[in-house]
Amino acid sequence: MSSRKTVGLVLGCGASRGWAHIGIIEALEEANIPIDFIAGCSVGAYIGALHASGSIGSLKEFLLRMDGKKIFSYFDVVFPRSGLLNGSRRVQELFSMHTDVETFSELGIPLVMVAADLERGEKVVINSGNIIEALRATMSYPGLFAPVRLKDRWLVDGGLVDPVPVGVARAMGAEVVIAVDLNSRIVSRGKPSPSHPAKEKQKKQPVKAPHPGYDTRNELAKKIADYYESVENSFKHKASEFLRHDSATPDIIETVMTSIGIMQERITRFNLAVDKPDILIQPRLGELKMMNFDQVAHAIEEGYLGVQEQLEDIRTLLANS
Image (cartoon, rainbow, N blue to C red; front, top):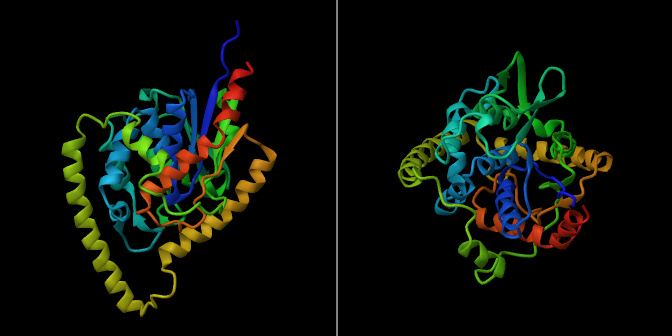
């Protein structure tokens, strides 16, 4: 009697499109597809860490209750020496409000995050130590967030070197690799309908119950979000007056993130051609800009549907043990 094949889930980078990872995990769990390993980059690492800690239900509830754009308001605008935004304390808040897990060793599923060495241009694999520090590194968009000093290296967003780290999942021991590419530019089928069966299933079958301290933390989160949104709006107004910004021109944050997204798309194409996953899921989110954080339900649904389209192929791979 042969044992089943181990499954590695690779969650790629993609900023606001990253909420699709929630729908992908939901669909896999609903279909009883096991997840033995997780390799994540940037927002994929964030979603992966919360799932591995058993707290993705709390994250989903939080996102759907709040205006997604407020998420970005958590980050302090700073004088642009090494980055426009300071993410140190805010990443910790956005993670710790859903879970008490602090280190990789506490996770229920083995997780690896990918960052990039700013000086050497090398891929850095992080699989131990403090999760918040690792998240700060893998999510540090160059020019947007300040680099992170970790073990004598300055680290930035892993999407610069490996946006969809398939090879990392295989190195962890995964025999079947399911990879998620959020930067394919495939346009969605249209705005999700409230009566869509996938969406209705998501409402009826949440992944897991929110973290026990969620209600209290959610109230605090709303207060913090409101405060930072007012600060952000004030800053943008003053910056617009100072720079005489034309509203028709993309702002600096959108320009930086979109430019990096274009680069990541091309790196992903090359990497996936060299190191192919067994299953490649590409949610139809090509119409979303990198900063469309308010499209939470839409992104989750497209991720869910992306798995549904390939569910039979996944089951066939796992059956051939």
